Every structure is written in structure tokens, then in C-alpha cells.
Image (cartoon, rainbow over all chains, first blue to last red; front, top):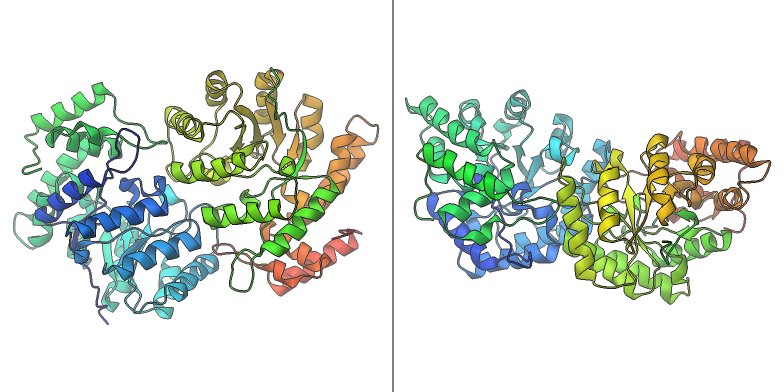
Length: 305
Length: 305
């Protein structure tokens, strides 16, 4: 039973640029998204690395509209639409589906901790009923180290049993390979697409029968990650994976979100990109120099940015 | 340097009723708030126990307007206005200040974990600048076991130094008495009001020089908690405290939010009150019966509800 969204490939949780007054800068956003699409990655806008939860629902709707108005194909979008409050999730999901995005990526409601699977199931049941659109395809976003609320295998099983056409897959950002493998083993045969949460797990994920990855560093190293996704059965796949890990390792020496933005600012000659919204903080000048030096020494570049 | 909000007393984080379609029921909400004000407690609407983060900003604004339209005095309101996204916090805070509430109670942005004090400071600095109203008084809401992001003593010190008129106090829901005591010792002499996060700490808080408490069970046992606040220097204060703890202990045998609602549903003969929004779940029929039996055996009642 392959769902007709059946997403595959590499997605970038697109970082969000802010102007001097900390408002989203839709012009820079569109430009970055256009570059990402040219590099072959899909656009998981409004993810953790997008500072999605630092934006209002209205700001996210405006940014989505800006992308579509600029001609970015809806088919390449996988917007994050899961909020704490059900009406916010419904509003954003409804807007995305109505504008032709093939699927959405949904955090669980993340304020209350130690909530039951019954409560999380009810959240999705209510959302699906309110959005009331057969085109809706939901990818579950499992990132327990940040949201502190996650998707157990038994909850996924229950959601799939109740909504086999709607529950389309998962992004597993737990960093726990045993969990990713279990999700693939249990559910992939039913057409459930399992995405790794970062590219260090990409080769393992493809070999196990997963769909690809949705990864922060897709913002800065997209083409190389896409190449491994397309050629994972080639002889040089392990070498490719090592090369990807080396680049990611440099970014991981810094706080990830401001580091991604500092790299885009540098390689795109666009200093506005360094800004983040509170409670995050931008890299210091020293950290920015250090990041750029490390990347340069590695021979890293972002061609065409 | 006493701030001119200088709140004292007992506040209830008012539970929010939902109708059969899970929409906020403003009629029941007004009725409960009116009863609470008659019992002598202030209204910390939109707190954790209010399922505030399960509601959109628009829904909270509508409920606040419903209270004011119904003649609930703005002076008795301490609305929760801290959201993950700065523009949401600004919008809700601005609305509250503009409608005459003497202060707001603010969660930190709670999606990202392990954020720096610099980032949290920047969040409040930006908010204060955007709200741009001398009347703004902020109570910091410290509940690290739920929000996972809290206020260190050094962050409070820094906020007080920068915004001595605006940063008016704290609700410490950590359950860590040493922390509450340290907040009082460090800052109360400057007119910073420290509220305990629940009434089991009320007597200790008053004896140490704190301002009162903001407590879930203020929804169901308000008059007795207010009485202790008013008579904490009386001889029977320890006995009063024990009696309060016994009632709270019964509620703590159940999940707190649905238990509060089940009690209001029972004593107010208003079954709609039992509903919660996902991801929370209502008490089962068995749990409801068990709660009511335990309360009845204890001689508990909610007169005038």
C-alpha cells in the first residue's frame, strides 16, 4: 500500500533569514530556497533549524505564500505544521494542503510532558478531522531530545491503522539508529517513508529500506548529500558518506542553526543571514571567522549561492 | 524600590472550559472566573493549568475580552502571555497591557533547549522594546520541569538591573524550596514579588518574605488558601497549611488538570467541564467517581459554585 505522496530524497529544513528588525526576510528566503531546489533538495520549511517555533502562524503562512508566488514548485515543499495548539496546527496544515504541498511534517504538541499515546493520537485524529482533506499526508517528526515528546512505535502503529492513507512517514531525528531501523522494519513495507534526521545516517537508512534524509546541513552541502542518495548502491558510497560526515563535523563544532546561517552569509556575501531570533544567539565574530577558516581549510564551497 | 504593580495574594491559573467541539466556552469561563473573584483569588488566566499553550493567541485574546466585557475587573487579572514565538508574546502582552491588566506572567520561549541566558535576556529585551508601554509589569514564570527552560538567579539579576520597573516578580513552580528561598533572599528587598507555584509552599513563602502563591488548586479550594494568606501570622497557620495540603493531596492522586475540571464539573453540576484539549486526556468515568468519593469522604465542597 504505497501512499501517493511517497516522498523520497533529501530535504533541507530551510533556515529562515531575519532583517534588521528581526522580521522574516522573504526575499532572502526565496533566493535561498531557489538555490536549494537547483541543488536537488526538497524544502522542509518551518523545521527546527528554520526557527519555526520562533515564528507566528501568520508569519509562516506569509513565507509559504512568498515561495509559491515566486514560482517555487509546491511539489518540492514539505512544510512543518505541528504546533502546541491544535487550532494553530489546523490553520497552518490547511493552508499548506490547500496550496498544493504534497505533505506536511508535524511535531507533536510539545508543551506538556509525559503525555499519553491516547492524547497524542487524539491530537492527530482531531487535526485530520478538522483539515478534512483527502489530499492530506502527514510525516511525523520525532525529535525527542528537543520536543521532549515523541512517537513510540505503538503510537505510529495505531495512527497507521486508523489513517493508513494519511500517515505517510516519519523523520527520525532521535539520533538512535536502532529506533530508525525499527521504524523501517515495522512499517516501511506498508509504504511508510522513513527519513533519517541527518545525513550521517543516510547510507544506513537507504540500505535498510528507508526513503532518504531531512537534514540541517542540507542547507549548506545539498548537492553532495543528494548525490549519495542517488548513488547509494555505487561502490564509492561509503567514501561519499565519510566525506559528508567530515563537512557535518565542522558545523557540529558550533551551535548548528547560527553556524548554518553564518556559512550562508559568508558564501553568499549576504551578512544579514547571520541573525537569529531569540532565544537563539548568533555566532560571535570570532566563531564566524573560525567556522569560515575550518571550512576553507577543508576546501568547502557553496557554488552558485 | 517597590514596583507599582506589587502584586500580593493568591492567584488561580484558571482552567479553561471547552465545548463539545473543543472550542473555548467563554460563558462557562466567565462564570468560573466570577466565582473565583468572589472567593478572593486573582485570575492567572492562560497558565499551565489553563491549557494556555493548547490555545491560539486569538483564542486567548477573545477569552480575555469576554472576561472584561462581563465586568471582571482588569485589576484581578494576571494573564500568561509568554509564547515560543516573540511576535505571539508581543501581541498577547500588548493586548493585556492595553486592556488594563496590572501585570503579565511570562513563560520563557520553551521549544529550544539548553539556550543561553544571553538568548533569554534578548527575548525579554526585545519584547519590552516592542510592547513599548511604561505600564508593562512582567512576572517571570519558572517551571523547568515542564518548560525545560528556566530562569537562573543570575538571569533574574541581569533582567532586574536592566529593567528595574518592568521585571516585577516571579512564580517559582520548580517545587525546589531552596530556589524559592534564594529568589526571596536575593531580590525581594528590591520590591520583587516572589510567588510560590503551589500552596504547600504558601506558609514558608510568607514567612520568608514572599508575596503569595499561584496555584492550580486555587481553582477548587480558593477561600481556604486565601484565608491562610491573610492569616499566616496567626497561631493556627500550621494547622491551616496542613488542611490545605490534605485537599491538594487528593487532587494529586490524579492528573491535575483533568482532576480540577472533573471537580468543577461535579460540584458545579456542569458536565461540560470535564473536557480537555489534546494532548491531555480527560479523567475516565472510574477516575471521576474515585475523585468525587475521595473528596466527599474528606468533607470537601465548593460552596456557591
